[in-house]
Length: 506
Image (cartoon, rainbow, N blue to C red; front, side, top):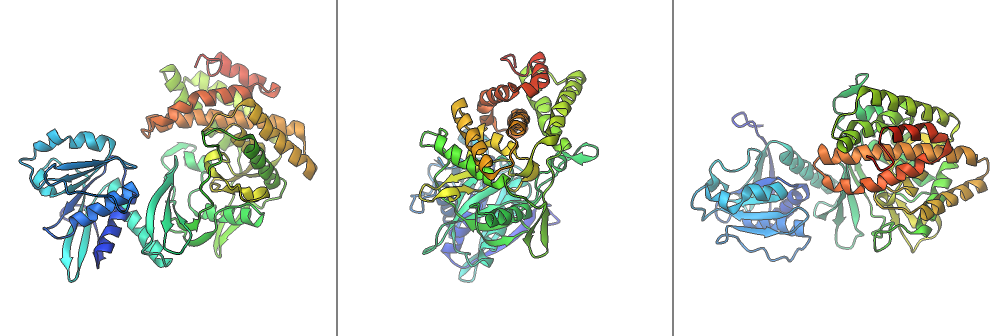
């Protein structure tokens, strides 16, 4: 960190143009809405090469024509994050940036800015400066900044170092997918080698205490590091479940290089659930739940993961997300203490009924976004499972509810029944299965999960600025009503109805 500016600085030596373009690719993998990258350097220093590397990686098109915006001042690209390439060399005065709409562009996209010194004080305070200078036959890149954009770029460069250590320093990186957490995934390709996946799983930021001096993530037993993924993945693979193979790992920093299980999603071409696939996934769950699982799993020599219990505190604090976030959203006023107390009492009574429920390894998010369908395989190998690091030891019915009431896609009652029936039939074959207890636990866990998700989706909108999740709320309310129809949940159902949480009044 420089004493004068308070900004952090890191350097990269770039021996040739390929290395400069690769730095652009690394920056592209880190870009998010609102990021501004200032490209600094003399004529011929490599700014255009670097900008071209960023833009082509964002567009996933290595041959994309990237004209210099010297005369137009700005050139825009419809990429994963809308990207705007500025060349301010001919800018008449800093005030012209207002006419170009830099602020509006950063509100919905990211910006690369050449000749940023001509902008005066009009650039954002957290702009990341990438200065290129000649260094012998190559160049030296000096990256300076503070804030989230700089930290993401620094982590992206650390990921390149990780790939170098794994013998793939010159691999092509492309954004693959992300989720509601801080995890993200990229594809990694090299000539003559199958595509692999680079998993970026930073250590969980626990947040402030919310109850009994503990943060939410600790109470809910959310995995805090990638060690959980490695340990649970090894255990599942040993049981015949198709999970990603790990080729290289950095458990401290949270980087994994893993196999690519396939590109065919679990849904059909129109994004609808397929009865056959849901049944196959339910049968896989039945095989998992019929086994005995230890609570301590080895990730690597000297690295262990203790699988937490899905206990009362975790179930309650998850369900209470409905009160914390969904109730204020639906009623335009915070939940009162009477509602909170009644909610806890009703849920404690429901959780009491889980005492006799079967407990097993619960993958926790076993639904369509996390399942790959591999039609060319047979048996359980048709299903690739890619997300399981938050697994707990708890009521096995939870995973069945996660599958049969998929939060991301509407599962009609007949396909829900197909999945549940397939699970029950498979468990009957293993023997020792209490169907009545399962049906009750299924209803309780479905009600708990969908209460939690109503709160999470509102939180993603209001706290994290992700309004797309709100479109799922009608589906989740419908699932919640289905679950609460079970006779064992009459008391909980009555509470939800009295308080307008179901029944079309919320």
